[in-house]
Length: 226
Image (cartoon, rainbow, N blue to C red; front, side, top):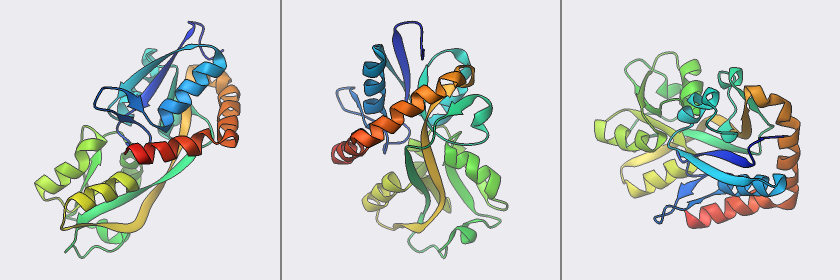
């Protein structure tokens, strides 16, 4: 079984607003919340939603028996502590730069003297740490702080998820996206590595959620609420 306690503790990463958000009244919504509710119903378990403000904090808590399932981007560095399903969604990581910036491509960003703001421990932090050879990575505590930090400190680039990055650009004249994504972020459901024998059970649930239209419907509702 996924858990012997009669309760399913689902880690919800609020650092990626494409996947989960908190309403003003405190209610958690989004595709990951919908999947957590559906999984708890399927398993006959009560549900505890455990919010985190960044994916790195979810990963850090994997060994502490705080959550039973989570929703995270697949990354090889995380696979030593966490078991992943196949991806249920792929989203893009992009750079935000000043409209007047000469940068037009990913290669342009990776230069000496270029400072790139990222969310500590996010999937794109791990990716850029491996792939950027010359630019300096400037880490902030959560993904939500990345683009405000980039703007307020006058950095050369900020990294983020396409949809919230595009919304930030729309709210801040004088900025633009580099349209070429620097990575595709494969979102999956996850278990602590000690529970990896339950991965096929989780994968069957996700497969059924995709066929039923739950994932697509939840993403559409999320976009409307966002």
